[in-house]
Image (tube, rainbow over all chains, first blue to last red; front, side):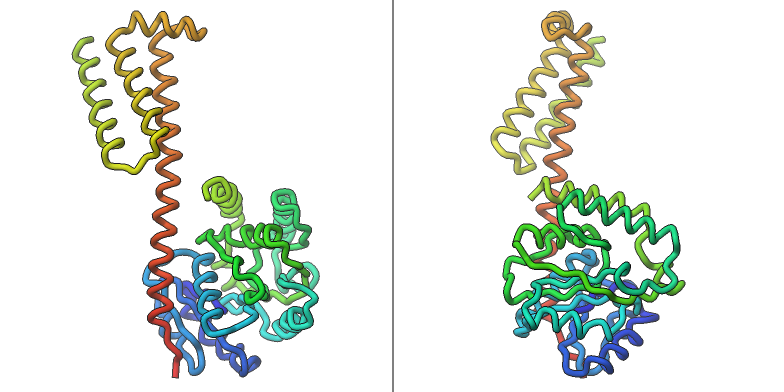
Amino acid sequence: MIPLYNEEKVIRKTLEELRKKRPDDVIIVVDDGSKDNSYFEACIPGIYLLRHIVNLGQGAALQTGIDYAKKLGCKYVVTFDSDGQHCADDIEPFIQTLRKGEADIVLCSRFLGKAENIPTLKKYFLRVAALVERFLTGIKLTDVHNGFRAINVAKFPDFVITQNRMSHASEIIDLIKRLGMRYVEKPCTIRYSDYSLSKGQSMMNSVNIIIEFILGKAIK
Amino acid sequence: MIFIKLLLITILTIVFLLITLSSRFRTYQRLFIIFGYGALAFFILFPSIADKVAEAFGIERGADLVVYIAIAILALLSTVLYAQVKIHERAITKIVRDIAIMKSRKCE
């Protein structure tokens, strides 16, 4: 399941690579009201394509994808970034962990795996952010806000993301705790390119994410 | 002085009517706002009483008391409005999501 927003330059390549490596999987792309040509670029054979008529945010796109996956009868959902920074080869061990029943959700950790070309400042910042998140949620993780996860959605009908924007990542950690999901971190490779870095989260935005997360918890 | 008082009370009354009539507030929120606005109007009209009430609360001047009450009302209003924005956002999300799922397609 791939949330998509303004990635016309890379989405086709990302999807073609994914399609080639995972030919039997259901691939769902949710275009979150992109202003560019992303929606049409994402239309390659075999892909299920959905579109939000207005931009709601990545959290909302993920939940739309999860709802649709359930409708198609999928048991497991892997969330994958559209900008080509995730590796399709990493999907199999994630799915296997769910199939074997070793966990209900598998999260990707850059620090257990390989983070290619990660800027030093970002690296330390992410580690601090992980500590803050551990403090807020009580869940021990080595990494934060990474779009690559595998979730057993069939087992947890209450796994619903309500935070529309980027604070959904913290909400997912909160859901793990609230629903008592068994979680495991697995290594994964994140390819940082100039493109993905220029489009990614600015570090200052993390402050917004934390505030949004706390406000979101206060106003249910 | 009379002019500025009338102006303040007119503005307060308009805002008060707009807010209480047009938005969906809960009863206790309405009561808080009605009481707060009533107190404000009263203290603006009778500053000498405001001074006495302020003194009873350990505040030096009645004008300060008016400001504190106004801040409390504004804080409540902004919180309630934020919550309403969130409620609307969730409604919009549901509508947009349902449309997306209804219009989903498999690329050939």
